[in-house]
Image 1: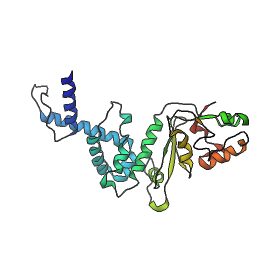
Image 2: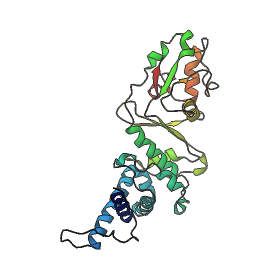
Image 3: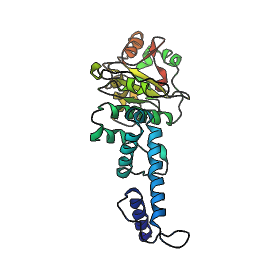
Image 4: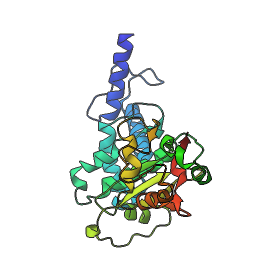
Length: 270
């Protein structure tokens, strides 16, 4: 069994490293070893992984061009091969890889654009959950507000950038048209969520990212968070006498729907 694992490791390593020789003992249909056959197989594996990344990061590919993207993706594949046969999760570390890739240093926003794309993919494939109905929140009695528990919808992802990464991403997906962008205009934060069938991507105002992320950063995504007396208490003061201030407080830090909270971001636990 150990020998089999060793052989498999040798085979996998040779697939992703063109400098390695063909593993000993591999033969073709004619019973003879063939480096040419192995080279074709190796190329198909690498090319397939590159195309997987290109499909997951279309805006990045459009920004840098097919050739540059193919080059950076090839290097990434060599350093970060898949750890699972399920390709949906492949490329999780690609944005960080881009951020440390010296030839891409002239595009300082590129890694953040990649993070938006990764967040979009994660939001799209996240678990299903019924979003909170705004009417249910409005119906909570003032005296019950301190007992209120809100859970982030499983699809919620928040991205932050010191650059206008959201605007750049929007220009380079779908029918977007790239236009000049002033990188000195400041950063953009975004929220991505899939309350129904489609992923929604929206810009967050100052404080919005902190409001959404703070109660959950210290623990698991699905852990209940007390809306009062928590990290966001200064932003969202909830108490028996503050019901009337709730829509305004949330709208300032999140997004508003009919003057209240964007309920699709949350699930309810009472």
